[in-house]
Image (cartoon, rainbow, N blue to C red):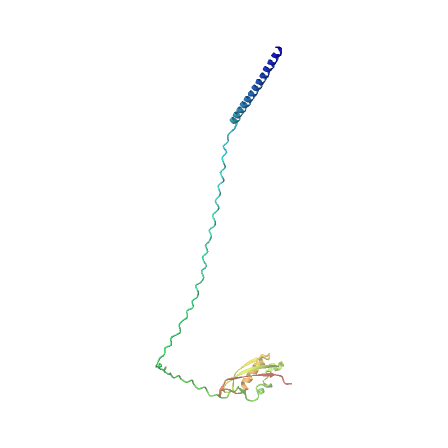
Length: 213
């Protein structure tokens, strides 16, 4: 009897242990499940829901307007040069020739004057006699002044001297004046001739004033 009771007691104890273990497992599962649920509730309550909105893309800036292009006038080529060819003149033939133009007589030119001899004026006699030592101005002779005077005379149609001018001075006015004075008084010429007619002429020479020794 005693052995039988021990076996029965051992079996009951084992069943009790198993039941206890199952209860612990069930309680642990329930505890864990409840705690997890409470934790989820608590976390859900503390969580802040943020509504995240998608950022709209920035508006694209409109590109600046393109500068207006200046419209250049079209290049117009000049019109081609048109060369017009004039038709050749029409030649008309006339059976009867037109009357000839009247001949107007023209006056004949006067006849040229008859050609005659032409000659320059020539002195008559020796020009050295036109002024001599006796014509020496007394004051110039006293002061022993000497010199050569060049002169030019105008001759009339009668061969006489019309005018006298000094072309080269001797350096002394009295010697120059004596030269023209004596030439006009003494000189005589054959007048100049043009086409056989006497005309005025001219003549040039010099007088040397020298005191005789």
